Length: 244
Image (tube, rainbow, N blue to C red; front, side, top):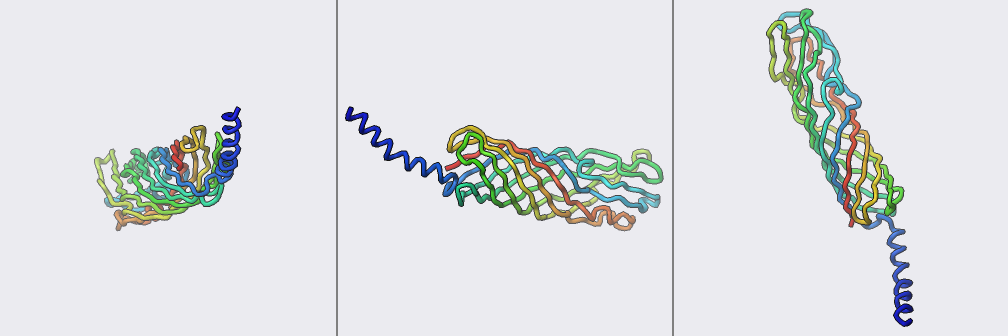
């Protein structure tokens, strides 16, 4: 009996502290997040359309979007966060992405098919923002975030071919290494796990501004083709989160 009464007294003494800790949500707690992502392309042009002269022949180029030129990208994201209120977390992330291009028709030279194959799109970026947790500590915890930052997109060249004429212009400079601002947001859900470990799913939207163009087509009348390069994408991620 004395043991039972002592156990109950200890439980009553500890429970208020546990409840207070739960009420604090994520306040004062650090988190580390790892995510693997697929970046679905959603908008923006790799190049504009125009007309000019290549090798002394009339040339017409059609505008091509990122969806036309590139496949779905893949990459990862890793970062840390700190809870400033019960529901609100500030965070910073590092992310990497790679997307391969496909060979495609982009216009014609004197009526003959003009094809292009661009170099891969590779980027390394940093983002920071705020994440709102709607049910911290629950078995299902939905959240939303807003963010901003920048990314470094590696230089992109293009190889242009007119197969019917046996003409190839290899590795024509198109975009230089570019550091561009990034804006976006995410919605997601952390599932199950424990108070320390969770897995989740996440989808978002990202935008970056125009890339730095190179006048690789100078003298052809097509110099303005690459006065663009901004991009919209929808990253979809599998998330692993550690909180302490």
